[in-house]
Length: 189
Image (tube, rainbow, N blue to C red; front, side, top):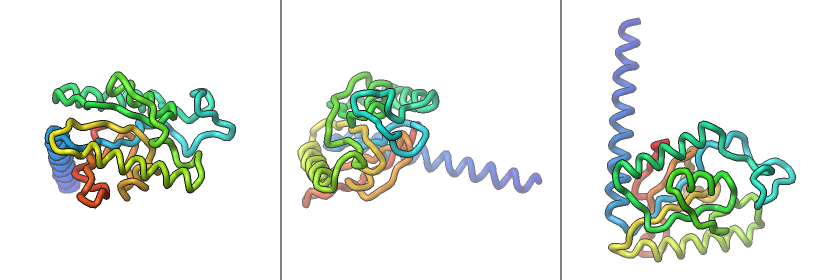
C-alpha cells in the first residue's frame, strides 16, 4: 500500500511538472506574438445541441454549466495573472462559446467562421476553414500581438488536425505554406 502511494505521488508530481512546462511553452508563444490561441469552449455537458435549437436563443442550445463558467473564469484569471492581453477575441456565435469568451476575456466579437460545422453543409464548412486559415495567415505576421478564437472541438480538429478538451486551447501560427502549425497546447481550465 505504501509503495502504491509513492508511485501515485511520483506520477502526480510528473504530471504537474508536464502541465507547468506546457503552460510556459504556451505563454512564451503568446508573448512572442504572431499567433492565435484557438480554444474549445468551456464545459457544456452533453453532445451536440438539442433538436430545434436556434442560434440566437441560448435557451435552445447546450450551454455552460456551473463548472464550465468557473473554468472560463479560471482561464481569464490565468491570463490576467500573467498580464497577457489578446489583441482581439473572437468567438463562434453559439452561446457556450460567447459565454466562455466573455467570462474569460470580458469581450468578444461573434464570428460565423468559428461556428459549429454540425449546423452547416460541407461546402459552407470548407469555406469557413478557408476563412480561418486566411485569418491565421494574417495574424501570424511577425511582431503582431496574439488573438484568441473560442470555438468548437470539430472546428479545431478540422483546422489544426488535433482534438481538444473543454476549455483547452492550441497556440497556432501559419507556416509559410499557410497551413496551421501547433506551437503549444494550453489546458488550464
